Length: 149
Image (cartoon, rainbow, N blue to C red; front, side, top):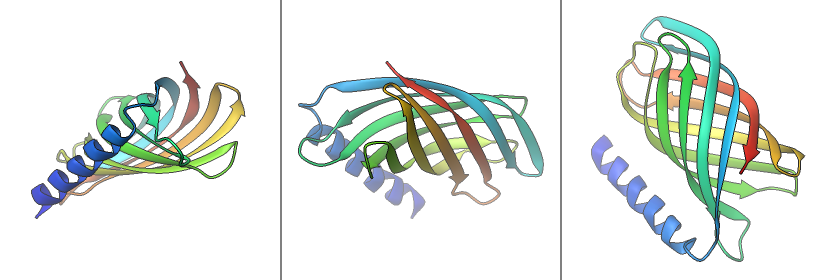
C-alpha cells in the first residue's frame, strides 16, 4: 500500500514538473536551526535546506525538489518533491512527499509542510515540519533563512 502511494506521488510530481518545463528553474539554499526525534533519540542543531523549483505558467504554484540535512549527531535527512502555492506577494505555503529518516527511526516515506515569508527580494524565512510515515518513524522541524540563487 505504501509503495503504491509513493509511486503515485512520484508520478504526480513528475507530471507537475513536466507542466512547469517552459518556466525557468530557480535554486535556493537555506540555513537555520533544527530539532528532531526518532525512535527515542532527540537532537537539535544546525541544518541546511537546498532546493530547486520552477513556476507553473498562469497559476501561482511552483514545484521543486528539496534536500534537507540536519548538521547534528543523529540528525537524518529528507529528499522531497514539493508543491508551493503563493498565497500573497510575501507568503507561500507548501506540501511535499519523498523519503527521509530522523534520529534512530527507520527510513521511509516522508511528508513535509512548510511556510515561507519573504523578508527581502531574494530572502525568505522558512518554517518546515517533517514526519516519516513508517512505524516507529521520526519527526523534524526547521526554522531558517533561505536565499534564492
